Length: 568
Image 1: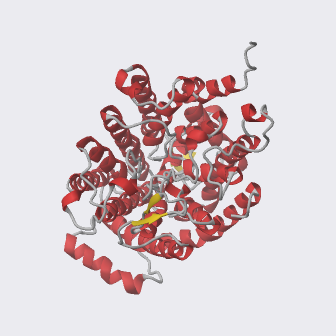
Image 2 (image 1 turned 180 degrees about the vertical axis):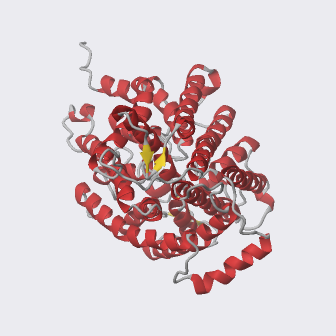
Image 3 (image 1 turned 45 degrees about the vertical axis):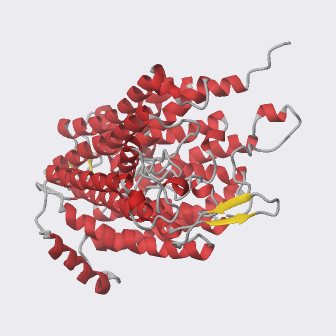
């Protein structure tokens, strides 16, 4: 990025993001609409071959059949990955001779990757073989991202179609998303990462002795290819424990910019795709504006807090921002943008340690995940998460003005609101319940790295991250049987207890007719007022639900930090 000029970095990133997202949205519109693209001559034979080999028909599915197909594929992927991790020491491409994963760790890791969470209770370079990384983790990064794309398209169809009992064919949408979107983007970004210096090999680790006579092992492996799909597919699991703070993954400013673009490019294009598919581009622009306002408000707060630094350090006569846990190549000046992009997505990749954030700085990514996977989020899942809040917003606005709520000509009635409320309420419910259990039970307290408010933040952050399928970690929280099982269950809940009612919502909307009549009394959903209302509903339903819990963690820690020292 551009040195230590955070606001300039953010502006450059945003401009490049929008420049790239616009043509990608048009391209995806053609892909999922079955139109020819510039890749069609190469990929159509492959696509048709997959349909014949897998006996995929073009019959359309109801929302329940679509959801069942997504669940079945997730279950099959989890079982396959679990088996690979349990027997990796006897499989090829294991030059470091890593042993098998323990049963509970294999369970947690398998669920993590099939839900796009990529939460890691292990150090990748010290635990997973090259085969596990490629056929296990990287392959599930493709499949899990493809499922998100497919479900996102199905939900959009719910707003487009009228008097329809179907939302499309899951297997066709999945195949097109993988072949035409995720695979080409991964190849482009993978090659770009290699050019930047990211390793891509199958060689054993290199053992060297430094000038100070310290022995050191320099890891390698097929890193660039996995990093590309990990970021593009909304996953974020790093080949190395340090994630994008590692110079092997993120060697310079150019690779850092590519990382950030890879995380947001598909979710941003998906919002624009929504506007194109519903034939009201201003509706897509309104959703994008709401997402950007929330995301960059968090960026500004985090950037200011981290740049201000620690008052306890300042009291010692040392000025400057909070450099604890920051990568010296990027510094505190680039932490805010990385934190905003990583936590406002389903990716969670970070170029510094979140555990070292100032208390209010740590509150920012926590709140970003607690409002749900709605601000960009994962591929597909970020948009359909936001559409749940859109339905709630137009319902509340309809009550305020005394009119039947509508969105894009579709009436929003009791059934639609019920499905939206289930999706909106389940998410905070599972986080707070799991946090409460962990905070008062011996297994939940056994592996904390800290006590007091910061220790509570470790627990709350872990369940917020896993429920949001984000995967970033606050640090300090160690694995044990309780957390391996509990976070795995929360990952599944955060993925499917939101996805299934949202698909049901889309199915209900697809069956409704579209009212093309717009009058002066029709509540507009493409202007500034709607954007403000939508942001308000997201914050009310999301952030305020967690205020009591956040007050026990980062807010309490902030108050302690600024208290005057006790008199001797």
